[in-house]
Image 1 (cartoon, one colour):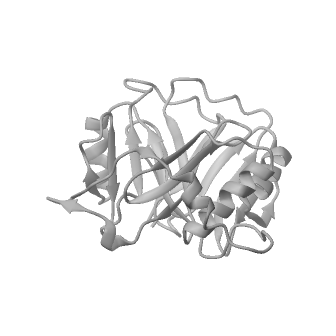
Image 2 (cartoon, rainbow, N blue to C red):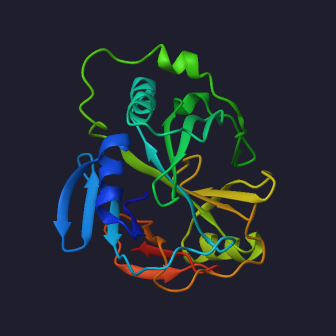
Length: 248
């Protein structure tokens, strides 16, 4: 369901190099100061603006974008690619429905790379899916590293979800469920809310862990420009915390 995520960056060449080398995306299109990267489809758009101010700490915006790779072997290859590029992971977690690693790009934008467990292993109760946070079995993942050369992130990789920082969950929930038609899939996670369409564990994550009562960053700041909630969406809307979304 999630399509592209556009980020405003101050140093476009540095960011493009990072997403190509450390993440393994390919440059698919260039349009002036906008570079679109992906696998078989565009996933990340980088809009270069050296005059854009940094997003102030404590404001709402992107927590992370989340690239969904096809299987555990490709997750292992992604870990190796990040390390070989000289970048450091900031986390490696098992969420029961998925296995994930985390890092930040050169401008501080959060990135998750993950693989889903088979849907028949997801546990649902009263309309909510069981998700949690435990340490990832990194050795087990790396034991499935495929042989052969790394040719970049594979076709079939998608933008699995986007996780946003908001000012208040009670204001965000009716917007995402009513205006955008998502279903709540996890409500009991402290300080967070997870929503999706079609029985997925989550297409959108929201949290107030560092942004309860926060304001939006100034217009034109670096960081999230918009996330495409529906691929091909052309209607730009903003949630109650100022996060911009493209929808149908």
